[in-house]
Image 1 (cartoon, rainbow, N blue to C red):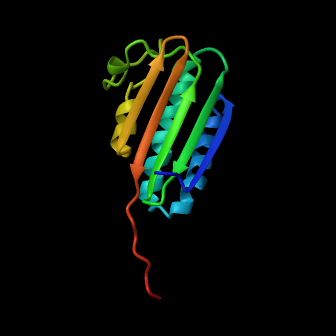
Image 2: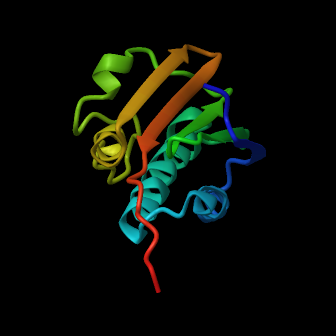
Length: 148
């Protein structure tokens, strides 16, 4: 299915840009008229994916985070968050709750579990020393127009 609209952005992996990413994706998705809960779910999932790039992919250096989003007429969305960081050695292990690679920090290791709880599907492709792409998909509920 061909998207009815799409966008692409890139920004540095500064922690301040996590909020920027949430806001940009929320503003873009708003044209599908999501509920407040749906928008909150999407923002939380994007936040987790971007935070993973900042904390894990680029660790102690700055890199570029890329986000692309596509909106479809059936109310579905696809959001890709990509980095060119260190990559994930074992994607299945990384998706397990409580697993983290952050050393010496208080990290819960729940990023992927959180994303999966808020989205319909979460795909993860990664290559060591090449980077990671997280694909988030969600179909929004169709609301009926009110007469009034």
